[in-house]
Length: 65
Image (cartoon, rainbow, N blue to C red; front, top):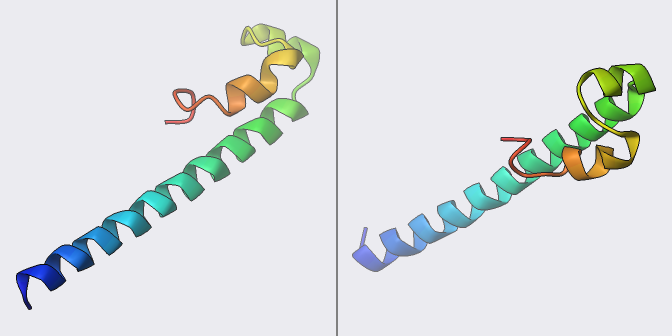
């Protein structure tokens, strides 16, 4: 393989991996959001979450890593 071909292939692989990572993160956020929505007010209070904060918390990148 030529050096140019190797670099092009590496760039394609990196782009696909980045895309896959974003999809996985989105799936995790959606799952966290659904799970938090299923909780009642008492369960949410036990973990220190207000129902109004569910979406922000579920989609916070630091929360889902």
